[in-house]
View 1 (cartoon, rainbow, N blue to C red):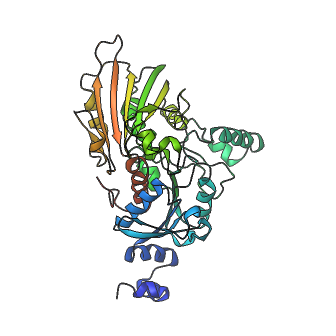
View 2: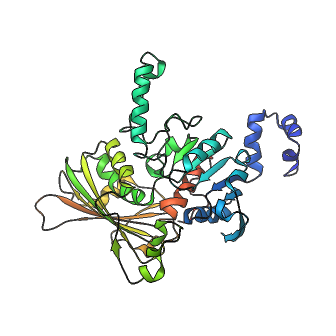
View 3: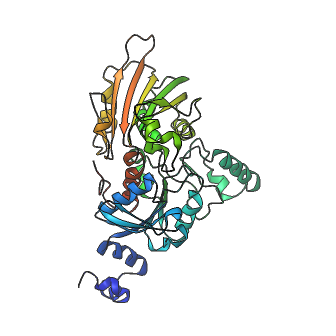
Length: 391
């Protein structure tokens, strides 16, 4: 039978192969590339997604939306991509949809795509840990008050402290609990999910650097963990801003979001609380005069000294294709345009209490956004996790 004959005649394929309609949907993906779409494709993360999809051997880009640039085209990943309006996206024609829409605007489109039958990877902050904690709390209180004897109350409702991220009821039709897409830490949940909350760029670097210590309960109770992290200007988004002009950024280096109020902080503190870590996190972001890349330096008070700290990370992430543990301090040149995080842990001299300094470097647009989104999509679609990703 020819490659396209069954796809052109679903009835013939069912008769020939003995497949029911549900299995025919899977069969069509086996003989053709899997159709995917990108909502919000004109921003940096959206463009990076389109480029990765163009080079992916198993994915086919069916649409790329950008309301303000509809009708325009861009060369991404060696292919010409034409932007369409969000309302013109054929959501029901995709197996999976990536939402790279702005924070606050993404959740309704995640719901629409899920209702249309697509799996969804959401790159916004809308469904990440900590982003809707107060709304969840109100909803849980309402459920407890109104349905004390319901089956849900008997099985228990996850709180923001232990849930990775949760939809409020207004985003109905999607799973109540949405897995947090730190792939190396949450594979099983991601592989079985219909919707995944892709992590932010800073949290990806910082949380992967902290995870082995958290799992071993090596972070001193009540500690103040500090994370000083510098990012390239693409981390600020695609919208033009005077303070991000070349003449303002070049030959300069400056902090921003002072006062420990960066929007990524709740995502990290909620996740650390879910891991059972009793600590404060001080997050000090800085702007680098480069296009892409993040270098984070974490200072962590410990319960006890570690003689060979890197061995902890080597053991925890053994066999991970996208996590590199280095004896030398990482640099941006080693990670840009790659879907990797590069980590180095060092002991600290001349301090009174056991303290570790951990360095983590990533490309904010790849492992910190689009690359990790494709990594998660591969799992959700049953594809090899590394497929189509630059390592």
